[in-house]
Image 1 (cartoon, rainbow, N blue to C red):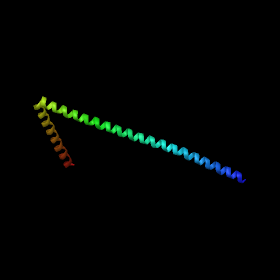
Image 2 (cartoon, helix red, strand yellow):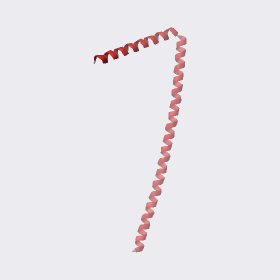
Image 3 (cartoon, rainbow, N blue to C red):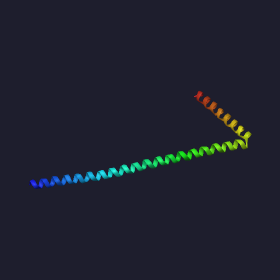
Image 4 (cartoon, rainbow, N blue to C red):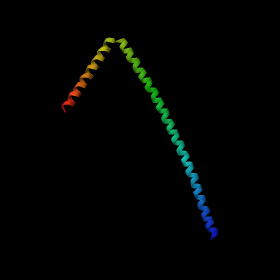
Length: 99
């Protein structure tokens, strides 16, 4: 009976040890997968930042070209936009004041 208890206890200990090794391997794989996901996200964020910067530079260059090509139209457009924005701001302020 004493030998049977030792074998049972030894078997249980071996089983627990094997499970710990399996869990350790799974944790390592999860850590590696998470690390790769973070690296991919950082790389994509850097690419997006670079593309956004290039798009903003292109927009500025296009605007400068348009102003040089048609300065009176550009001033007129700026005046119209400013007047419209001012009128909208007054309308919103009056509308909120009446409520």
